[in-house]
Image (cartoon, rainbow, N blue to C red; front, side, top):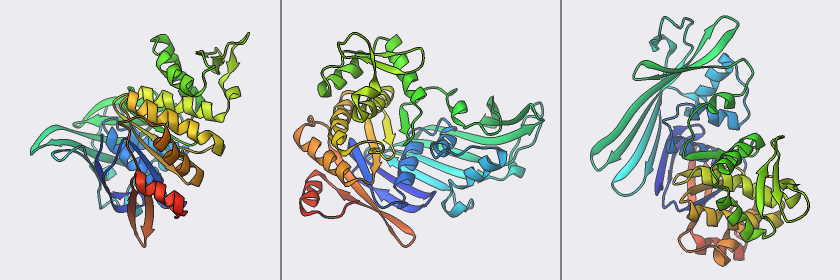
Length: 369
């Protein structure tokens, strides 16, 4: 679990330090204040060994790509698109152990490639990911990524290189979102939920739980909130159905937006056991009356599956529900923290609120968003 994170020269963030992180962390702030960039930065740090995480983040913002667009998207990783200053993100697990990620831009003229593949490079990134324990480096790997072009049938593909050797080649057609590549990577203990999560991904997660006979753990948490739910099934049409004791299974959507959103998040938390889940615009698509249902399930699942949660919101009702549920229902062992992300000229600052300060701010109607 990260206790502290420092982000330098990433997207809109010049320098930002976030201290005293807890099990469940909520980032708030005005629109375009940089809270989503904070979420993306911590996500990238949580598992940069999958180089495609860099591209996944762009996909969360629904960017469709061809080679030129992709190359430009890489530039947006750097603060003010200044590739001379590397991105650096550090995460402190405790006083003597930390993870550090550095990203440098590689000019196309400096990229080497296998002549057997053909084509030409059009730019790339170099990642250096290190785990420090005390004064010793326990893990160090370097990766490079670039885009290649060769003819019309295989116009675009990403080449991933480890220690200057080609690790894998993944073809993709022009205009197809990069998620089709991301789906070929191994499952990570780090899951990012965008405001418009693809339900096919959720059905896939639940299908795995169904096959491994582990879906009962998700159902147990749902039953705490909606006791009528006895089972979950994935239909041949990819629709998620639930058994509530009537003649036929019914689509989960019928149970309300709160239960559906909670199911999505619970599936993500289960799939990231022992890791991290990132949720952008957590209140998106929910009526305020469903927010306490959502937070109750998140707190319970976070503790049960040992997952650190990072989420963003712009909703006052979501903040109230976050505080109220923790005060009234959350079990021991799930502490919370709220951070208001503010921009002062060109700098971001994270102002933190512990649970008592959140309660007082709500009572006094202080502006936290």
